[in-house]
Structure formats: C-alpha cells, structure tokens
Image (cartoon, rainbow, N blue to C red):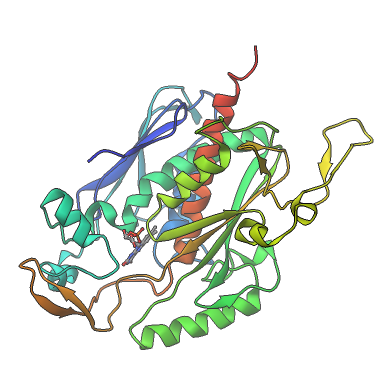
Length: 368
Ligand SMILES: Cc1cc2nc3c(=O)[nH]c(=O)nc-3n(C[C@H](O)[C@H](O)[C@H](O)COP(=O)(O)O)c2cc1C
C-alpha cells in the first residue's frame, strides 16, 4: 500500500492498523531545537481519543508532577529528542494497541459495511481485515495527530497557531463564537447553546440507531508570513485541501467565502487592501479569500471549513452484500460515535499544522 507519506521537507510516514500491535509515525526534516516532550504529544492524542472531549482525558500526562496512569493511546517517543528538544534526526513515535476487542467485529467479518471502506479495500487488496477497518479506521489518525503535535510545537516558536472547532453538527449550526467554549463541551462546538441542542439530537439519533455529520471550521492566526505555498501544484490551498481530504469521513473543504463566492460579484468578493500607517504590511478589510491568493498566504488569517459525513457504522439495519456476493442485512454494533466532528477537530488541526510546518521550511528556499 503506497500513500503513507505526507509532506516535502517536514515529512511524515504513518503506519499501523486499528487492531495491529501498534500505530505510529516517523517524521523526517523536523528542525533541531524545538522544545518537545511526550506530554506535548500526549495532550493532542488525548483530545483525539473517543470520549475524551471537554475536560480532556489523561490529565495526569498534562502535568509531569501528577502520577501518570496507564491509559489507552499512550505515546512512546523512540528517537529524535534529547534533553527536551528535537535533535534534527528522525523522530519516531508509537502508540501500542491495548484495547482491541476484536470480538466486537464478529458480525461484520463476512459483510461489507455500507458507507465504510470495506468493499473497495477488499476489491483492491483481496484481503478482508474486518478487525475494525484496519488502515481505513479512525485509529489511523493517531500517527497524524502525534506528528501534528510536533509541527504545532515548531509553529509555536514562530507565533503561528491553528484552531479548529465544530461549527455545525447533526443539523444544528453554531450562532455565536466563544473560543473558551470549544474544549468545554463534548461536541467541541463554539456556541454553548448550540452544543446543548447538538447533544440532544445526538441522543435521539443514537436511540434510532443512526448517526449525523457536521462542519469543522479552522482558523490559522498569528505571525503568518505572506507568501507561504509553492505554485503551481503545491499551492497552499491545494496542499491544505489534500491534507484535510485525506482524513476519513471528510467529504469537502471550502476556503474563506468558499462556494458562496460563486454567488458574489467581484466587488463583493474582493478583499479591499489598506496601507499600514505604521509602515508594516498592508491589511485586508475583509477575508473572503480565506487568507490565500494565488495559492500563497496573504498574511491574513487562513480560514477554511470541512464537511464531515455521518458515521457509517450504525446499528440500524441496512442492506449490503457478503464476501460471497449474496444480499444480506447488516447492523453494526460496538463502540461508534454518533457524530465524528469532536474527534476530527484535533485531526484537522494536526493536518493544518503539518502543512504549515512544511510550507514554512519550503518557503525558506524562495529567495536568494
Ligand atoms: C478520528 C476518526 C474516527 C472515526 N471513527 C469511525 C467510527 O467509529 N465508525 C465509522 O464507521 N467510521 C469512523 N471514521 C470514519 C471512517 O474512517 C471512514 O468513513 C472510512 O474510512 C471511509 O472513508 P470515507 O468516509 O473517507 O469515504 C472515523 C474517522 C476518523 C478520522
């Protein structure tokens, strides 16, 4: 299977299946001297774990003074760190699978789950790894999130920050934006009231054996230099779209005004520019471009939204076929979220951080 490597200079390769011995990532090209510890990586992995929304799971690991408990998804950094800093050599990290529960998947061993990757994976490789989706499982994102934590630590040294949140889920849209609210509610929504309504709807969907989708918004702010991105094929928006669309269950992405731009006039859509009286970089009076023009960052905040489909694994009976090609019914049981948005929020942040780290390093070769 190809396609496990992402990035040009800040380059990651992920490995591992949901029910194998371990999942992990190696990072090549991470600059030396970035402050990094297992706590930094664990904090992001804890946000990705099922049921670890709001008050983050694994608090013991956020604070080295507290005794760390043995928990699922515990990262081990195997190389590339010395005395709390990256050394410039390749960084390898693994998370051992300790909670596989293969028995949960007995019913689907010989049936293809509608909406999941089972059927095309079987056609492509001729092997049915039914133990939770193998490489197409959400656990595959562990390596991305671990690597994203390293990219995030690099970006922090430059004063750049990516923040993602649920802006819509299970048919309910947020009406206000409160950043402090995002990690407080289980939906990772930016509006407390909408989050309540989402949770109510999630309970209804669960009772009906069904699931729902949503929209994740992402904003990059801070010291974003103008000019990040590599025209023509590796434009910043193209790379972000590639990164974000490679995450399971994400089905669309739009930057700034996005699809709505198709309905605006040029004068409405253009972001007017103003000089900076203090002599610095000019500013933009609006941001329909989402901070990217010509595939290059403008220095304005980078804004995009990603569409997340409803989780395919639902207990409601559905029509499918089995390995022998016979019609049958399927009802998927086990531990499945009703809406994936809160779990995908940290994954979107991770992919955004990886693209930015790579683009910053590549940008250093742009001028003599
Ligand atoms: C963090 C994360 C967790 C996921 N958990 C589940 C899950 O519990 N059940 C499920 O059916 N799909 C889950 N998915 C989505 C599947 O991985 C995805 O739908 C599947 O690979 C098919 O790919 P596609 O939806 O991109 O076409 C998860 C995805 C992510 C990123």
